[in-house]
Image: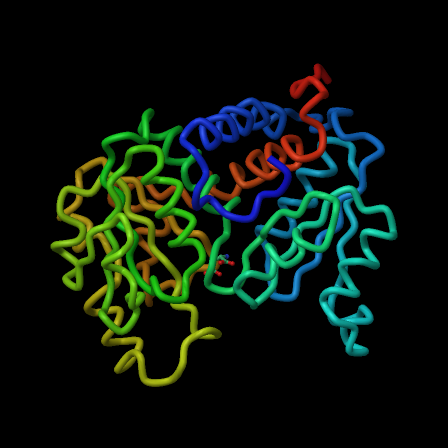
Length: 312
Ligand code: ASP
């Protein structure tokens, strides 16, 4: 593996290996002293053209736990604000001797563009509505920890599917591992090519949740939506909001995921988000697993010849 651009076309064995590596790293994340020398001397640069809390911070933590240098480019204060192109920016970071570039950009295909012009590894931290592979992997790791095997599980992804890179990475990763994926949402938020994806499509929430093992709730991506796709947020919440009543259709031990940031009271109720009524909401686990998955990605691309888990 030279880059991590998406989960599409990755084999079950490749996904399994990344998840196993992440699980080994999770033990380090939970230590009181989180430091191993695995990537000492390497420099990881994060280049985010879109906002982020979880992804950017966890890449930085992942790099630092493994003793790599983590450098964040604040795009608004960089020469991007003077009009420097993406290509020139990437080449500059490579000349600064970055060993890996983590990129988030609003343009679908931007990470692949970076990989095509650079000779160092590139990790896609979200490219437009295309893919967000480390989010897909951390969702899979969280499900695997709660449910054991991914194979045979029914996972309902609910909400703004069209604009969600998280949905796409989940679809490819989960189906490669043998899970069944349902897409649930209003037709206006369903991709035009949904019928060609390895999923079933549901415009009725309760039908889409029936007997589900896992529900992955998506944020409404208002920054990517054109006007008029939804009558109102209240209407959306009434028809597609995940609350303890709608979850009664799913399996009693349903696991609830959300990639964050959440719009409480819109796509998910606070009760569900906070795990009331005995519900299993895994958002905090997802965030912590995000560090382990990003350690696995950095290690696989930069240090696979170094033993992964080194005693503190
Ligand atoms: N944080 C995720 C992403 O960047 C999900 C979201 O923003 O809704 O795609």
